[in-house]
Length: 85
Image 1 (tube, rainbow, N blue to C red):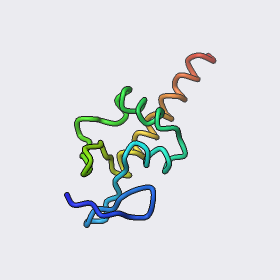
Image 2: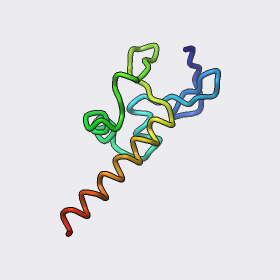
Image 3: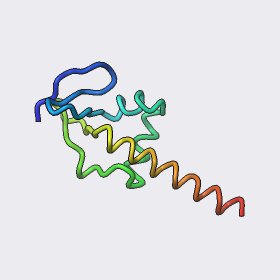
């Protein structure tokens, strides 16, 4: 997969798919990079399905980042219901 630089923070592949490193995903979502790493640890982002950029860094699609953010938000809402109930 050939990636070409795109407007920050992501990179766009020839097919139009936006790819993000951990740091770029953090910038894109307005979160700390440690939050993105925690999504990986918790299984919201699958490290085994991550592609690699030219520097060997894990990169995720915009769809993967959005799905991880939704999963983390749903998980937080579930925890809040359990602890407040």
